[in-house]
Image (cartoon, rainbow, N blue to C red; front, top):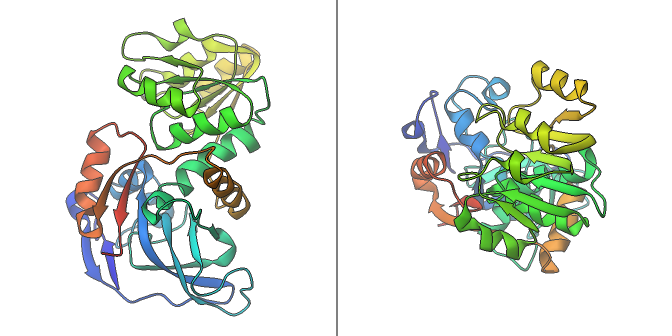
Length: 317
């Protein structure tokens, strides 16, 4: 099968399409013919030696965790899926899944049925980003009706799902994004928007219960500055880089809370997210689709430009 393989850490040019053996499903696993694969910031961070490189180890390996496709074969013991089923998922994260390839194998219960109302390219844009937003809001922050939620980087892959899920959960939603994104984010459910390029968000937001921080302190001390917008007892969910001892201590001294976060495979949540997509309550934004052979160009685009929503690889062509 074709797969994008890298033999060393480095820039986008280390991504090369090669012929590799097709995997075979073990008991309780399925073999999925991948039609589209989503691209996430963790992919290019891992490619260059950061991200999940400490989990994957030294190259060679194949990147990619977001996949949408068709079940080709099932291993012994699988009863939830059958050949021909259209599925999507984020298998194995943070271990290697090899999503930039024509086939992947993983436990059947790490996949869910693909939302029939959207394409495979759109479905491949969902799992990692949407599960991050869903698990952060529902499981970590326990967002309920009437809560006030601030989403940093609201126009990105995770951000645009976080805005929609927070609204679905009954929250008042504020987002930070550049002004050209504001009209679109309003259609997704944002109640207030802050142009971070012209205003300090802590000067514009207040009485926030939960901050979904998709930026981190590495960029202009975003996590630490987020403490200034919280109500007493409020929570910062620090997603990209976790919670430093300094951030933890600063929050605790002010009666505030912080939480690190890492997304997990979650078939029940993907099933619920699919229901929301099919009901028209949640939309999926794909800015551009690249053929598998242009994985390097897709990484270059993702690293250098602020995309609206997600970038995706078409694997089937």
